[in-house]
Image (cartoon, rainbow, N blue to C red; front, side, top):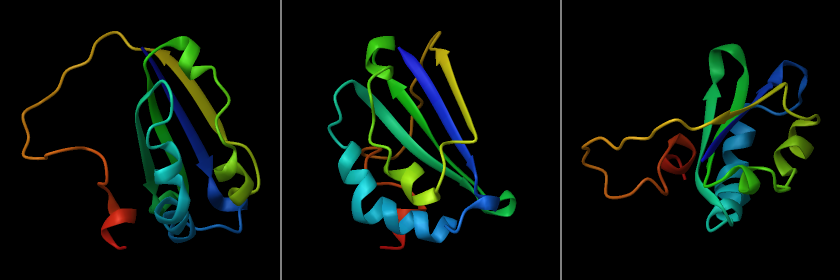
Length: 111
């Protein structure tokens, strides 16, 4: 498995976290649902420091190497400020009351 983290510093962008939440609701979540080789994608934000990003968990290094839609970079106006790729050493699932992970998060709660 492979984990990839991408991060944008939004200080130079005309887009805000609120704009990007709309993007998630209107197209991004649906676009990545069922994406080949993707185990999980989690979008993250840091309003205080004007940062936006995503954490991808891929089933393999080959899956992580495939081309993904550049729509976020197009909206933000530039590629990610940081991109990191890691080998996954181990995983664990905790006990929780959620029925599924799909469809959760601030962007979808405010829909």
